Length: 158
Length: 143
Image (tube, rainbow over all chains, first blue to last red; front, side, top):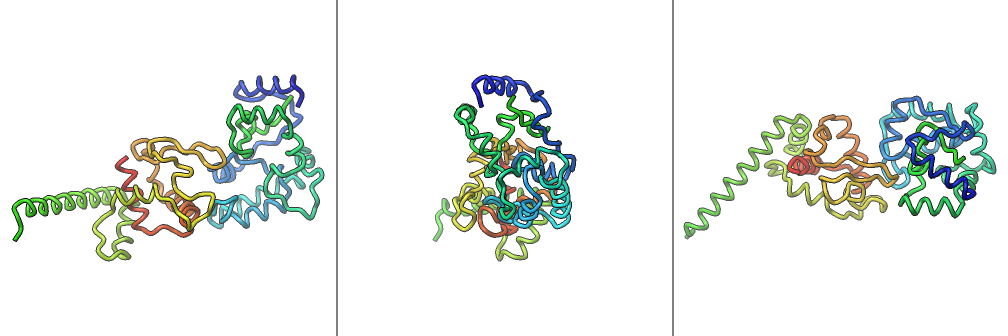
């Protein structure tokens, strides 16, 4: 990120919702169960961030979800998995999903969005690191700490 | 032979524990979730005389090694003070555990079951007993 862009990100972070263009727009989640159950402990990440195979693996491993038991009842697992897989990066018509899969080997089943090459590329920046330090963001799972419009699907930095 | 003082002390202890028990029974009667835990605890714990806020406090603050290494204690996410907000490991705020601060926290049986199930497994590596759950809520009700 160039200094001028960084300044604009700071400006955007000051307002409640980023009004940046639709370039990096992910459609907001519309399923209530997904919003509620995925959003209990972290922002409910848009399904377009990961391919279908990732969501299948994720939903099969909820009893050890990044070091916590996040198990749900069978009906909820089914409903959530159906929504996530129907809107996954490799299924959704939104092009942001396809972008997330750049340089992702089809034999790889990523579980952390922050490990995707596109995510790493977008965040591998001195200004980003400075912003994370300044806002004392303790995990990259906290998108909304910098991207104030994250839950509405805005991740733009311009 | 007992001195008058030891007699008095014994009577006091009896009276206090009777009062504590009465409070617990009363609380359990007015709270169907706690009443359910009390029924199970009675069946599974020999000599069960009611829940203990003190035991609940110890459980809340304890450091465990049998669960997931990321969550050695309730306080990992909830913080040391039940009156204060906690924070999930993924950076979401958690409303205070104390009933006085979050009055509706222990009122939905589904939610209570869900979070005890998940969090006991994360922290202790097993489900909590009815006694532990009752003690925990009893402690939070005094906070």
